Length: 276
Image (cartoon, rainbow, N blue to C red; front, side):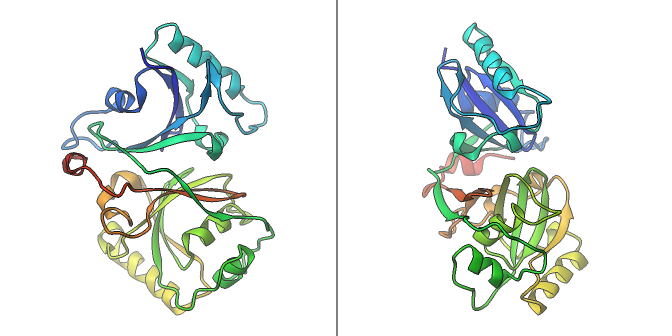
């Protein structure tokens, strides 16, 4: 039996203790052939310290004891269970990003792609935010040079909610804005950048309107175009960084900063050919 692991599944937000490992759990929970089902996910292996989590969960106000529940699930696996649910929901927002050991993309049929080791893109030390801030204001507050020409980018937010938007913000700027903006603030965020030339992913009028608004007003920060099950609508090969040599992968941010788990330099042909 493999050592018990804690694995966070996104976008469902559940946390599982398992002896199957990432690849085994991906196959175990796969709904079937990618030709017939849509069940892409992201599996994140977390640090453990023997039979207990190797980190402290973020406070949730006392409605559950995540630390105790995760330890109990690990103990159940140590006694012979293949899987034990530790947290059934909302695990993404209470699990600190510093607890991550590895990050894997999973296709519907259960094929996994481990992303490369993470790198830190930005540290956020200033936290005053208001809705009237321009992208250049945000660049200044995070210690970056203003961008001379802003071309609208297309982002897919995966957790804590799924949606597609266009934005005049760079990933570092968006990571700060979304974890600081009053009224729209999230505790932690996972997102990726996708190729912009994809008007088919939304009603053409919404796609075109969003682009025109951002192009005409460089102080406009974001324009949402789709609220939907986006992860299953956009193939991984449409993500920026997938076999195109650009910086891309999965971005994770909180109030302290932004990191990226990039795509590996070589993506196995066997994984690329898998359905789903």
